[in-house]
Length: 179
View 1 (tube, one colour):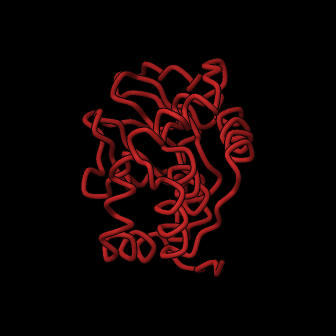
View 2 (spheres, one colour):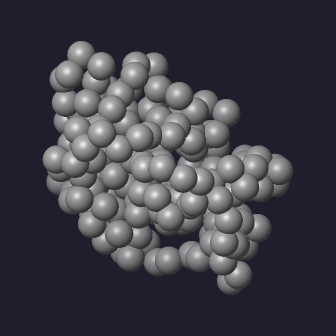
View 3 (cartoon, rainbow, N blue to C red):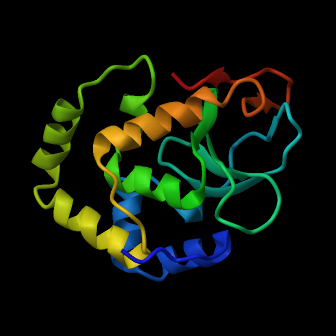
């Protein structure tokens, strides 16, 4: 695996320039840069800036937190139902999460869905899931951490969300932490 050191725009541009990667991240990953932007304006209690980088089919938005163009900024997810928080410590880690655990929301703390069952469900829809995961990770220069390691990273990131990285609606109402 060759890790590609780049900035956010370059990595997302690279993703959009590789139809196989873009297609996989759109489905089953549910991560589409063309959908960047949340229906309602949000902010963080910390005041750190947010850069919308992608959306999902349910109206949720993925953001990078902080200033600059580097991929090493944390990634936050805000759902259209008012849940939000950090999901990864960097854009490459977020993409590894989406490739390895396209069902990441079912792996949030407190949801306790068994990985074996989630994998079986996805494999019934995508019999070539591992081959596609490996190929997309390779095309983007990313690693393929094992599912338990991805769940652990997700839980660590989510655990860092409150209070600094908890989204707040324009009305001042805080989002519900991811759980």
